[in-house]
Length: 288
Image 1: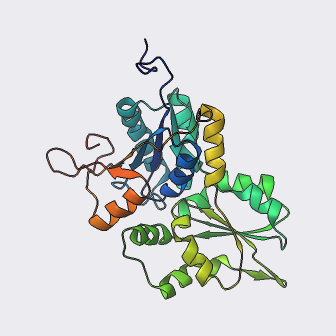
Image 2: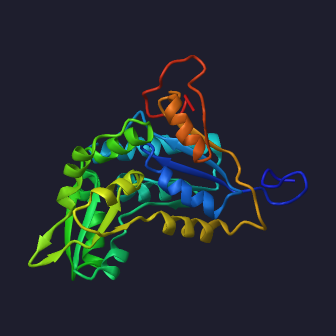
Image 3: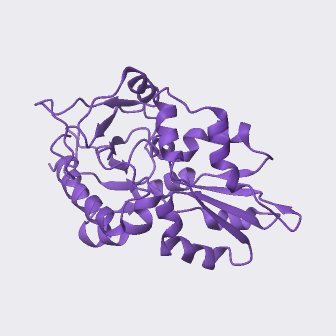
């Protein structure tokens, strides 16, 4: 009997690795877990490298490939989800050429925004790294050439989302100022679609809605990513209770009480720090 079978001879639940620079990928994880509650999920946050938005492209590419090499060796996933726009728009070709398992990326949801807009005014709210990527500009040319697309790169929103989850939210005025450039009026037409092109941003969605100067549609790619996962690994057979999911940090740190509580509410149990108590700041997985 192979390791892909349980003792009774039935196929074991799929193992899915979810990877992000921090906690933004939780917005993707939630949809993945709804779609396959029986799957064995491991969520890895590269907090030792956070944030990715301003990291030089070749440094980021080398870091993610090196990390993934260790993570695949340790956790043996059947599929990996790169729950980070900044990384996905850069590293997917390298990952797919090096590793045998399927990779699902997270890229700006420009196509659905272009299909749904009425005003023709679309904003891509992202990190500076995603805004600068050729991949993003290629998507705009391919799917939104007839629209006015405004690219807004925020250096601070991902950090604000991490603080929100840790129970230390920024004030309304600060958050309002950060999203204000996403709302554009042009020749009498106003932004009606905002693409959340960073998985951290949906963590702040309710506050975005409250602070927006006018109503817009906020486009989150997470449901589409979950559908793609199911397409690749299939649907669960019968009704399955959610399996415990593991949460690990590349720094090896443990979570604060507030953060651990928030993660537990999302079905994630935080792994402790490295056995020697030291933090690991190198791009490897000895601490996880």
